[in-house]
Amino acid sequence: MGVVEVREAVLSRRVTAREVAKAALGRLAAHADRLGLLTQPLTDRALEQAAEVDSRLASQSGDEARSRLPLAGVPIVVKDNLCTSFGRTTCASRMLEGYESPYSATAVARLLERGAVVLGKANLDEFAMGSSGEHSALGPTRNPWDPSRVPGGSSSGSAAAVAARCAAAALGSDTGGSIRQPAGHCGVVGLKPTYGRVSRYGLVAFASSLDQVGPLARSVEDAAAILDAISGVDPHDATSADRPHTDTLASIGTPVEGLTLGVPRQARGPGNHPQTARVFEQAVETFRGLGARVVDVDLPTIEHAIAAYYIVATAEASSNLARFDGVRYGRRAALGPDDGLDDLYSRSRSEGFGPEVRRRIMLGTHVLSSGYYQAYYATALKARRLVQRDFDRCFAAGCHAVLMPSSPGPAFRLGEKTSDPLAMYLEDVYTVGVNLAGLPGVSVPAGFARVDGVELPVGVQLIARAFDEGTLLRAARMFELANPAGRRAPP
Image 1 (cartoon, helix red, strand yellow):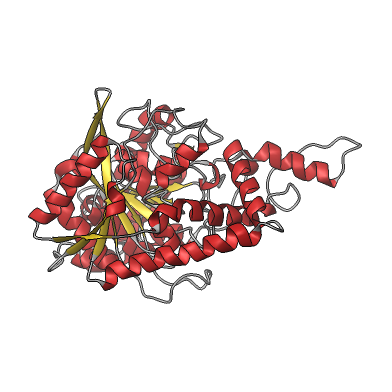
Image 2: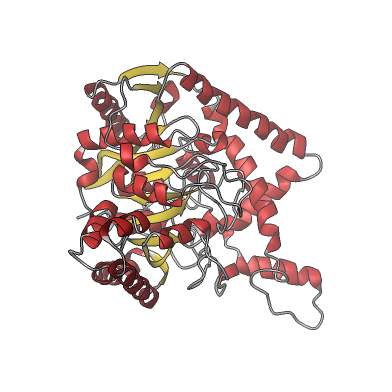
């Protein structure tokens, strides 16, 4: 069952939260190891949380419970770069393999307050740096549609767990597409809210001006329910917007009147896989069939967004991860009698960080270094403003949303691109611009690509103006109801 189905079943007392938790934990036990879904199961804690939800329901009237526990008994997994006061928070890295957080991230705390049950911490690309789910110190996550293929990243375990029906929903983080891209590859809905819509407090920082927490779920309706629970201003996060909680679920079923969609010419680039291109054109025709006005738009700087992103993101990563030095935070290497402080730093960081994290730290340190700052970092910030300007022009011209593929191709095989970092980075070509501009985007299942005899999900993404998640999700819901792709489960 999905989020809304579980909530209604538990609130109406047809099932208990504990029964739901046991069923979900049973599915995780059957599939988590085979697919590499979790860094840590939280079985005992989940059953305790579920029993507490049942106890709270027993002491409240129906209306009171519906108001206070809008996610009663909903089983979720949480990406393991979000702090929890229970279990470990490892970021799938040897650097933090034993770390236990003294507090929970605001997004996690809000879900727990509203009755959700955390089943485990989801696997991810180490420190959320990756596009395939292969860069985890605990081993890769596998795609439930074809375990020989990647699920996308970095919210790999979150997307795969929802696709495999092991959780009703999941929390992920999106720095350059890390919710939307794996959602597309796994055939689920992935929502990246507007920057500042959801608190980042308790999210282990990768690139602070780009990171955003968001939900993955099996339907747009379910994603809206999670967004409404976690959104809103937070005094612990100076970058959270001073806006109230969203109420997108209340209007999710109302079609967008006179919907106008902008389709960038860059979305039909030669780098798209033929099957992705076919599904995308079918999605355009589906929207036309719903009465939408589809207009061609131009996003000229989107072709430069990938370069700007990998300068801004790596620069911020270099700064944020400097704290993991073996002294203040993180893994501390063993030293010999003749070793000094430099040996402690270099050995602790070399042992603790995997190759992709080390690569990005070095790139970021380079672009911030003397003599290169203006040429690289300052130029990337200028390009970032131009990307935002291009999106603003689309919305100013009357577009309710912009429609693009979630990624240029379907899920590729494990190991296929690990030796070519540039090819891996280009997997995010359609998603990074949204983060640079701070806009909300949602990936929705759109169809299937047949590759080597296997059917693989393909997603499309909608992008709206800042803080207009209501219109974004209503448009996505219109498409979802007209397209059955998201209703299929992996074989």
